[in-house]
Length: 209
Ligand SMILES: [Zn+2]
Image 1 (cartoon, helix red, strand yellow):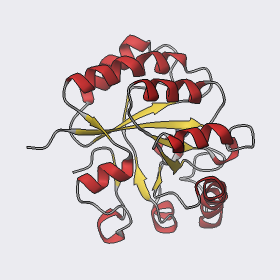
Image 2 (cartoon, rainbow, N blue to C red):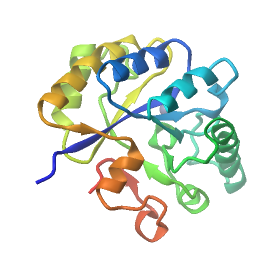
Image 3 (spheres, rainbow, N blue to C red):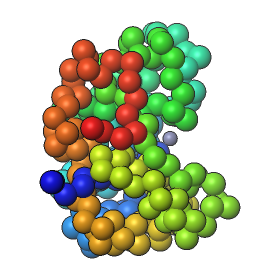
């Protein structure tokens, strides 16, 4: 039996405050994660942060350009949200992203039809709510953890409780024998090609395999 695998994912960056702290924790434990970036947050100021994530082996993914609800958008608008973000991702990484997470996890038929990426949801702990303490974020995350799970966290501005929680989440999962993977590595390990539309169409993944 193979060791269980888990993917840590972080939404709403990049920024120059919380994203570097998240990277510090990942680096300390020698693990990687996947960052779902908001296109408009990818600026000359934040580019070094993205480059650092890449140099650590982290993966970059698409979380739209403006972070608006996209389920009420027309196809043209949807495609613009994706393309503007892809342009910025490509300018830093040299290639497009394989994965997309809809803002607020809001999806529509139009989105599934016009976005080529593999859709990702994830297992969250409501870490965008300031009332949810670091301790509670740890508890909720560990409670949901399983082989193939995609853990959904936020490296948004001021989200210090998640930075605090992340350290213990990683230590605990490591103690349980989990290996940490980027989303591409997780899908590969589970023998699913995220680019194969015959398999991934109209699906949004929270657990792989
Ligand atoms: Zn978001």
